Image 1 (cartoon, protein in one colour):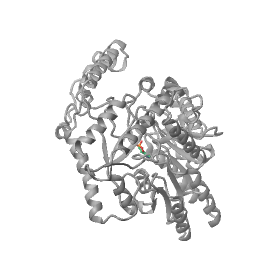
Image 2 (image 1 turned 180 degrees about the vertical axis):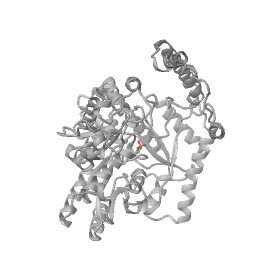
Image 3 (image 1 turned 90 degrees about the vertical axis):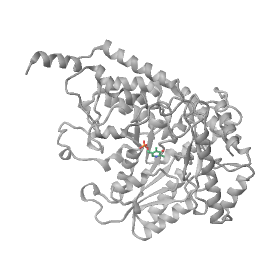
Image 4 (image 1 turned 135 degrees about the vertical axis):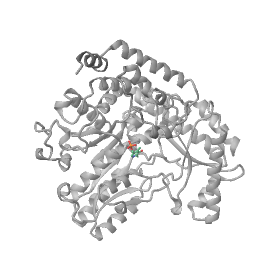
Length: 533
Ligand SMILES: *Cc1c(COP(=O)(O)O)cnc(C)c1O
């Protein structure tokens, strides 16, 4: 080996050159800021054809600028979601406290699989998990958890614990031909299907319970479903209550679900299924738990105070869950991936535990500190703990309360403005969250009356199709004609979570996750609706 050549190459890629790195970093920052001065959207269109046909690798070793150039066109052309006009979905711009945490993490690149590969970063994970656990479970005694790559995987952990509770030893023996089921609401995230499929239950054994008008699971139907399944000898492994549905922010009554689960399990003499709270979106409401509405230091308006009071009431439900999913990369405006799976009682992790014999790479492993003994993943990134602790403590409780309350304030404002238009109908008036789903029909139609008729089963299939088509057509019309520099970007959901009479209901959707969105943007949104209707 030509050592001179080799040593020069190693210096370029493995010596830290702060000057070179900070220069490239500041170039990327400048480019990002230039891009952010443009209206949101796609700045360079995609070129998928060549991405596949021509994935060339340079021949000769280059330098860090080559690394920059290799990714730059894709960096420019990826929207960082910083524009306040982005209202499409449960996604905000990442906060900069999270960036500081992320950079610190990337510089050390810990692997959270075991203590010896991550040292104090594992301690940080314990701290971040406990901080989040206290927020949702409130004064909990013995929580434990880990960061995963997303809400889907966090929910999968809960389902797996449930399977082990009702089919003990399934990790080793499989489901042994048992019929094993899971239960969610019709408004739950579709990932429940992914989980049922991947865990071997089969999606046919995932049961979706209809919701009420507030997009919350109908408890009478939940109880009836449990009777039906237990009578047929089916083992019910888990029930997932959604705390904040992705489209409409419906919240399932977890306390009610808990009572029913325990009653039915006692009646049929079976183990109580895992009660999991999918709070991927809704967990952040927990920041408002201790907001003192009498002192009202944030000067929340009289309209908003009852909304916050309702939020405080709803958050109590989380305390009875066995486990919870928290997507910090959603409501925490943190970097991906930072989803947390947390059990209320650490002892529940025994259902996932493997013995040291099953993890031969880690002979030194100790289950107290080495998550690899129970995690699905082996290598795990440290971004979750770093971005979460940096964000939690950088922003502070009052900062989080401001962020959450502002989302509620703008959602509430839009709901009230839409309620004044005859041809519009707010579909999630009874939920309290950051999202608004609604109908826009042509001027002259009475949207509220049409919705009432749909609920009462008084619309013919033809009428239903006609109205639902009009809602889509007007959405498309606005989408085609919007001014990207002025008009908020919305999204359209084909199924907002409540199916009156079994009809899947589409809706316009706006989610207030961008801290810079303001009243003027809401006013302009209303104006644009008046223009297209
Ligand atoms: C987004 C979401 C998920 C999936 O989370 P990912 O982090 O995207 O995997 C699960 N449940 C709910 C309620 C969600 O909103």
